[in-house]
Length: 597
Image (cartoon, rainbow, N blue to C red):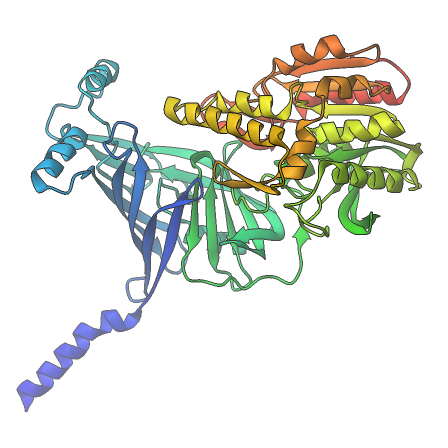
């Protein structure tokens, strides 16, 4: 009997740690440029007895590597993050990575295929002569797949990094930050404690330090609350809370929480990666609550916004009127976005990577310079009625005409005159109205000076894969032939996308040079220097067609979305208002009756 009781007591003692621990599991599906490339299965274990919160996961991802036989290798990551359960203080982080390039089904061939990828494991890895070694790797067609394993742990007042890379080991010590979080590539489980931090924020911005284990670095970081907004999630739209994470002054990632405080989605735009919670229906908020991100635009003084509805040919158009602070009336600008499907803020509803709100940021830039703006949802998007897929360019012209007429009737519009500002192909639409009805001034960003099919050919020319580029050229030639045939087809499938033939045929008939010359009001055609959508040389193509009162301007260092183009990371996603100062100066001089810059 005594032995039996001892056995029971030992069994209870062994069960106590597990009884004190609470465990939850979940999974993110990982998408690269919209294509499912893997998953991350994570586990969150809360151990009250040990005062430990452990977040561990298993990542499988098809990592693009051009030299690999399949064009990618299978990446496996196994990270473990430890936090104090009560305070969420950092306790340690460890990870390991493995790869394979098993392109062949036969075992021997598979081993040979893998040798190409992992044959660096047992050779000497020089930390001080990497350029020579990388050149040798290139000649031998070896693939450097990065870090194998590592950890960072607090040791007293020091944060200790340890990394094993192939056959070498590296260590680095940094002062332990008082407030720290972990970010690591291809793993999104560390965003779970970041979501908890976001919900506890006392203001719209919180500063702390992030550790980047694979680069063994500490960086200053900002967590920004961006508002409760309509968000694409698995083909549907939900109203979710949006947060941005910026490292230094450069946006790094975005994530969204639902009403149940669940982390449902993470996007890393610079990598084209999105993590989406698997088998989950978000609990949406009832209404949107906009927030002005202070790091996005420096707005001097207060301003107000109100949402309105404008009728155009029986279709209701949702729009937002932004008014600067102070007493009106104000010089007023009608913003006409590009013809790709995007809402009034400049976000593409079907593209979760497009969340920077470029058009909204631009409205705030104008407000800071004393200009009121009206921006609208195109037909079939957001709060506007009609069909997004079957809209004609001529219907867009009708909508711009209706919006301009509404603005002229507002007591806040100075002199009852409206300035037009259009972007890309949207500038063609705005020019149609400006030429027909007149306008106080005309401003165009990235105005294409060539026909739409010629423009698309230029964009195809930027494709890095020569075979894909050649095929795209052939597809464009076939598309041009179908448009010339003037047959009865209503839809054409072009490179996997359905195009509405009547709309495309109408757009292809427009002559951008003649259209620009037909606008008689003062005009400024602005071309961003780093634009890869409408190349800067369009400025030179357009210039001979312009008349007195029409000018061109090159914007240094910014991309198509008017953001500062970083040398390595690409556009930051933030509109560069400082680069737009010459535009504001031209508008102010034009509005006061003077000449441009």
